[in-house]
Image 1 (cartoon, rainbow, N blue to C red):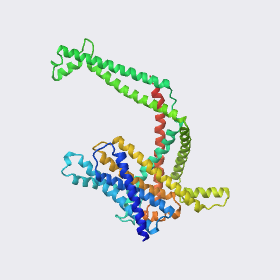
Image 2: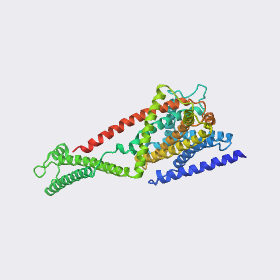
Image 3: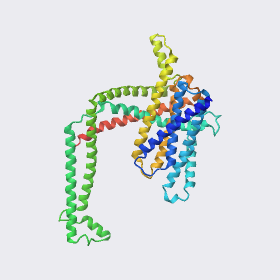
Length: 455
């Protein structure tokens, strides 16, 4: 009876997650598109629902909600379904919709979709060869074979996003990195933009007048043809001194300049608004938050470097370890096990919420940047693939943030994976991503003032 009650709770939560994924799909991703494929909608919503269910099971693990055997069953069920979607269903439909957009392959689109899926499976399987992610006793059809490869891709993605976010967040929030932009700078750039627009209008008028003159003289109707005619039309002077081809080249160059000036003007206005915002109470709060993230970024880079150099992976979760150090240093009586449970629950909850929110925001921006009416179905499926792999790898890494007694079922369900490898791999990719982001933002910040100072 308890299993039925536990299952009804899980099914209800999955339906709610599915509904949220459906609404997000309709209201955010596809709100500007009339053509909708319901199979794409269902796959995206199901992937989101089962991904969130894994995070729900982590919280249930800490709180002790549901029977232990029920949690184990639903862990197994969720992992099997999410792997079935990520490895078999989504790649096949991606290939199917790619082939559907190619007219020459319409008649045999099912065949070519299968070929693309088999190609994906080959590279997906070969992905595990260079990495020490499995023990030799795992069979070819075991769940560990699939989740280990999904984990490599997902952990790489997480590390790249985390490295860039750890650097970009303080750069975005801190007023220290804001350029000193005044109204005079904006007016000077706007004046240059207006002057450039006037020059474009003036030259286009000269071209229009020259064409009208040619039309009145009958040169348009009696235009010579062939190679020599083309050479003559390019080199012919109009009104005694003007070369239309040369003037058109000048217009093209000025239009490109005007686009750059417009973007620089918009950038200066945005910077001016950020300066004004930084003076408000909320802006000052985010500025302090930026300093906090700067310290966190430096600490994270330092710890990643230490872990890589000394080949170190923590055995105790950070919360328990931090409480033990504090208690031993202060020499006070404190129930470490009790408080580590509650603080771990809060920490894991924050990690889960921020991961889901951050990933959905990133997916939405990415979709709007590259989608079109023809490619939108393929892109949504790619986003579903990334989302599922991201969440599965999150479970692999969150496991280390939990006290030892709460890792048991997760470790049993995931199998005998090389968990230490994933944490080391995360540190390596995070370090590369963070250092690359620092270099990129430094060069961008250094070149920005020089760009606005050019006459």
